[in-house]
Amino acid sequence: MFDTLTERFDGIFKRLRGRGRLGDAEVAEVLRDIRVALLEADVNIEVVRDLVERIRARCVGAELSKSLTPAQQVVKIVDQELTSTLGGEPFRLAYASRPPTVVLLAGLQGAGKTTAAAALALWFKRQGRHPLLVGADLQRPAAVEQLRVLGREVGAAVFSEPALPEVVARRGVEEAVRVGRDVVVVDTAGRLAVDTELMDEVRRVAEATKPHYTFFVVDAMTGQDAVRTATAFASALALDGVILTKLDGDARGGAALSVRHVVGKPIAFVSNGERPDAFEQFHPERMASRILGMGDVLTLIERAEQEYDAEVAEKAMARLRAGRFTLEDFLEQLQQVKRMGPLKGILGMLPGMPKEVRDAEIDDREVARVEAIIRSMTPGERDDPSIINGSRRMRIASGSGRTPAEVNSLLRQFKEMQRLMRSGGPLGVMGRPAGRKAKQVKRGRVTPPLKDAGSLR
Ligand SMILES: Nc1nc2c(ncn2[C@@H]2O[C@H](COP(=O)(O)OP(=O)(O)O)[C@@H](O)[C@H]2O)c(=O)[nH]1
Ligand SMILES: [Mg+2]
Image (cartoon, rainbow, N blue to C red; front, side):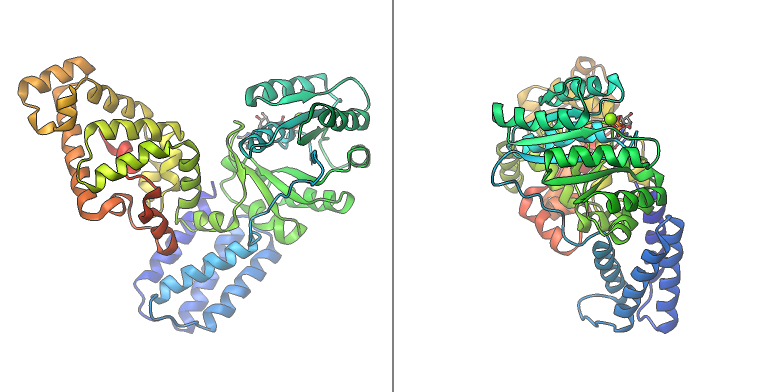
């Protein structure tokens, strides 16, 4: 996601790092580089101008700080202004005082409405709500079926019937009241391009359901086209926000960085893949840090909190602090990390992770190999690997189907990991996240072996 931009910013900041003091010429150079990077990323020209101007004003005003180097100050300013361009505060969804809360999705064909509808239902479920999906796309018979399949997948009921879209939508809301569902997500039909017929249909559905939220769903990969269609929809419908899909395929980021400013509506949710759980609330601050290559510790923490068994983590942390972190604990941690998703995705979110690591082909099968080796050890060996001699090593190797050299290599790396943990705590292992984020890591909410899990060979 947004790789080109991240790379460009990385280069810009690297060049700054060596400088002791930034004069007018240096500031002008940095601003020019930022401008070019943004334009290359297909960001709307007005947005680029506005953003660069704001950064210039603050760089020239030089809020001098004793604790930051000039380069760090520039990074901070760019980070903050980028956050503000992305919308500043995250979008907050308030539930209707009289349920159900009705959410209407609109957008072009193929934008990802049906996928987003199911993903939203899952999101609502995780918020403790009871969503009903309503299939009001009756243009293609397959559309309702698609929603039913996805609904089954996320465990949300689906309502539809052969009737006019606005009738189906209205009955869907009535059905939700009848069966006591507190959220209704209405999926609608799209067209290939913005046309009056489409707008009329969506407007009729909106009139029939009085949605609390109307989201425009748009494919981020279409760049400035996405921004243009969003503008067209916003002038025809009372939009509350935008759902940006296919960010996983968007290497440039033009739509994400432009839509808020141009359309005047916040990005509420983003989707990073076809799977319903590749969907999350949009956090401008996190996205800015991610673009600037600072990783996304907060998303990681959130995901970790969702998937991570707090009790197991606590236990591991306690043992770690006591210097008693064993291979058994390590195995448990591996299991947990695995539940958070593919390692590659997790590594991409860690701050300060070099590009080579982010891009490395990390094979989840390696984790399986490590697991196999540890599983072939006796509890005694897991507790104290120093007792593993030549014959034990042979036994473990043949038990796990690996070579003795691989067993050795794992043991070596585990020892190194223990050493790192003792010396620097989790931070020593995770690289150097900055400032506030570092404190969150320090509080022990991010568990240490994230990085090592991938690098064990
Ligand atoms: N890679 C990727 N594909 C997506 C995403 N969201 C939707 N898709 C795919 O895009 C296609 C169109 O999605 P669909 O929900 O049917 O769009 P709709 O016509 O607006 O309802 C489907 O193949 C989806 O699986 C996403 O965030 N990332
Ligand atoms: Mg659809």
